[in-house]
Length: 395
Ligand SMILES: Nc1nc2c(c(=O)[nH]1)N[C@H]1C(S)=C(S)[C@@H](COP(=O)(O)OP(=O)(O)OC[C@H]3O[C@@H](n4cnc5c(N)ncnc54)[C@H](O)[C@@H]3O)O[C@H]1N2
Ligand code: MOO
Ligand SMILES: [Mg+2]
Image (cartoon, rainbow, N blue to C red; front, side):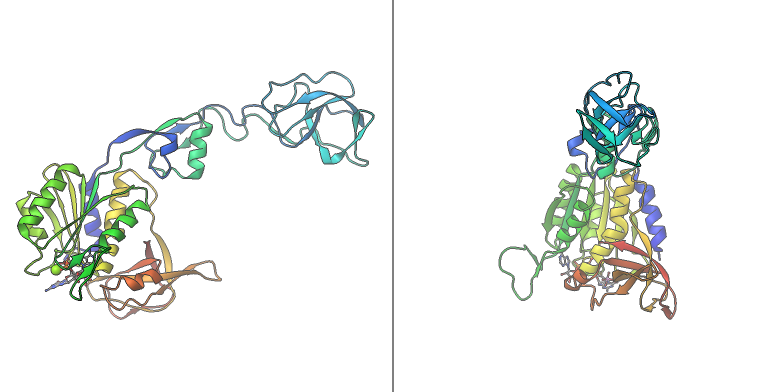
């Protein structure tokens, strides 16, 4: 059977890259950048005063008349000759002829001027950020494939990018399948189950900048499934299905896909939970993920395969997974990769330790709230000991 990494490679090869679009800076937060951003000009763009005080020229004088004021937002004033200074504000241009700034705390006001505090000798060049020390015009500040987080948005704004090239957001449809499933609001009978998978999947996606996805439900009926999915294949780039991929008489997803001309890339992965996962490509290149219906399986497969695939298709460079160490020994599964829900905590030694969260069954979405995500244990015999490094995937 397919190993987890083999499935991942097959999905990656099928995904390709999405097109780009230009969006206003105000709408760019969380999106994936698809252009190089270079500095508009030197930063700081001028010799910049860094403290509120006075700007003056190095000399042996201790008392200075105030000849004027240099505010932020003004062109540089000329500092007149003699024992004079200009009041200067943080962020202002350094006046022409000045070469140091003395902060207000080091000055005494006297006779309409200022006197240096006793025993205080200012250093030439002090409290000035020189032009271009942060960066030079044309320097590369951001490259394609970064997520537009707070610093990135500041960079775009500060360098005059009122709009920016980002990866298009794929049109995503999420379907749950199953006669037993009823809506969140409204009555629920003993033999019925409230639909939860689609909300978990939609949440995992919207938390990663994919906006809101379209959510639908279809009964365990082959014709109804074909009908609903054929419409979704017209209007969406990506379909994420939950349920109906295993071996039951009413698990119609693989057959419906065949009828719709969606080519199967794989069915089943050597993992638990999530073994029955299905993946295929539609006639127009639509990507179809068939996630197993059990809630822990559906969410683990979504986070392990769907989320990274969608992010990589946007060109995102930095993977969201990282390595943690096991805080307790964990049973391995012969021939199966194990996804083990865990709670993270920081250790005294500066590591992040992952403690297994008690999840009694792969249907138990209620206990998932105690876990931060899951770790991936390779196939094997016996137990992985405490301290084993393992890859973590956050919800
Ligand atoms: N003979 C076999 N039976 C099963 C196998 C197998 O290999 N051989 N695999 C098991 C595994 S592992 C899983 S996981 C499930 C996968 O089942 P399906 O993908 O076919 O999903 P369903 O049968 O439709 O539902 C399974 C389970 O999940 C609940 N469910 C489904 N959708 C939702 C939803 N949107 N919200 C909440 N809960 C949902 C559903 O009620 C069922 O309890 O198959 C095993 N069987
Ligand atoms: O994916 Mo299934 O039981 O392994 O939950
Ligand atoms: Mg089933």
